[in-house]
Image (cartoon, rainbow, N blue to C red; front, side, top):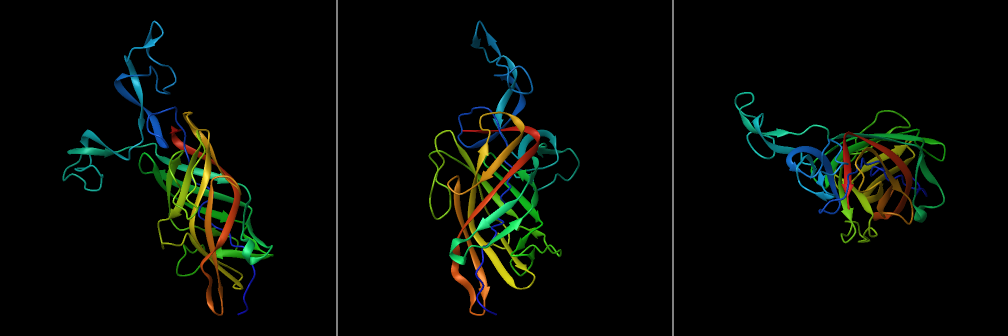
Length: 293
């Protein structure tokens, strides 16, 4: 097999789901509005401050709190704070899984270029993602890209480090872990960049078949696999809503993706060549969520 000059599509999930929330003391944190005695807000959208004579009086019934997957609850179904061990009898536990944390996203075209491999790109026409917030700063998700091709060759996820799609033109990422990164925090990629003040990124890394985020081939001619991390810019921040966008482009967020190509000599270059993804996703969450910066 001859060495192939190509551009790898980093499917490190250009489409994370990123939610939103009003301002908060914890930077880069998912928050939502929950019922609470002596809260700061009067209604379930946490938009109206409880106040008296123009000053907060802490007599509201709702508060912005960090999103948690498992919370203490009387008559819960679980016996410990990770919500992994169910009680022997129904409703006899002291913890419960929260609802409203699931997310979806849809995106248009996605392109990732790897300059070291030449001028060609792997492109996909659309994508969809399902995910779930797992904590105040984290979530997990998996993306499916469709209409994927390289130089006219349809691509599909396949190989020992992949989540096989079994369909030409469709690439499914491995399970991905995401983490919110705020100003003053460095992303985990090799570049060690950080968001500007008032900005938040959602950083994606592999959580399955690690360290690979995807492995795919195009008509059995071009073989690629991706590693590294990708951080997209979340918008809006400090606004509670069920929708948001995550944007990926050169010069924004942190593009710390690496792509390897399979040749007769093995996977090259060792560790991968720098790659850049360009795409945007529209995200939706079950409950109204905010990314607080």
